[in-house]
Length: 305
Ligand code: CP
Ligand code: NVA
Image 1 (cartoon, rainbow, N blue to C red):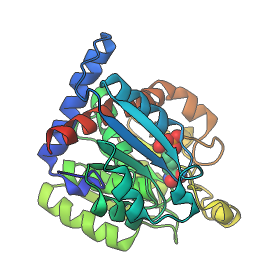
Image 2 (image 1 turned 30 degrees about the vertical axis):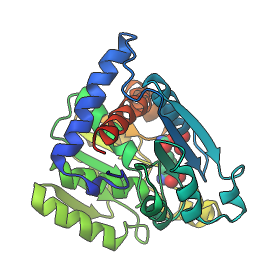
Image 3 (image 1 turned 180 degrees about the horizontal axis):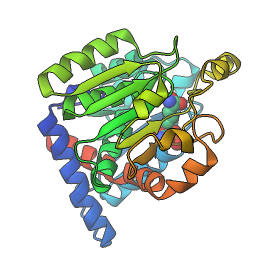
Image 4 (image 1 turned 60 degrees about the vertical axis):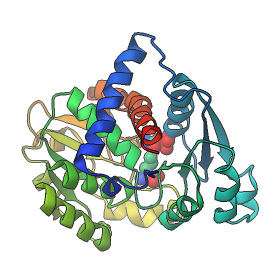
């Protein structure tokens, strides 16, 4: 049995198998052909943080695969009143067939997985957001960016960490520009660099967003204030001066460069209204692809137990 906790848990071949499944199931779904790959299975979906895309895509995804999703907000289950993660894992995983969790510390997800009898999927932690990056990879392929140079401009956060893993494993160039003091976690960088060495990825770090954007095929960013960091807002906004992805920044990238954003987007902060609307077709295809990419992941995990 395999868990989907970070991209680093898988080889390039395995991740490509999940992407191929996602592409196949997306094509079937577009023809309104709902193949019951996971008939009568239940996906438990534990949320300790807010969500629009993750909740809707997993719940709809498992339903379209012939199963059912259980939305379990920590406000409503005993986990939120202090029942230990390991007990929650031992109870829920005896009743459902797969679990998705969105939580704070990555170690809480790992603890759940350690005690779980069924595959566990990371729906976002403070450190990683791997299902989003599988989606972003699928989206890049759809828009013809097969071996891209990607510029990530913004906060060194869970999204950036998963971009590092994706670039390292898939073997493309990722340039990360973060303000001083908001760089990625050094341990995660070291792990990604080891993977990049094995797979031919190129990871470049700096504090100059314009330098990163120059000649890029894909420009991407994320909110400067992740969930749980609301109190840091005032200090962070000052540090991120000059990091908005606006027309001037996009004009440094290749002429046919695409802009990706995992959403939710905060216009006027990490991205300008103009750039957001100009690239909205890509951005909302990316959002829709959450549904398809995650079906590929769930079916792959189900086939490997
Ligand atoms: N991108 C993403 O994970 O969105 P939600 O927070 O709405 O799930
Ligand atoms: N970095 C953001 C991603 C939201 C999908 C957060 O953790 O809040």
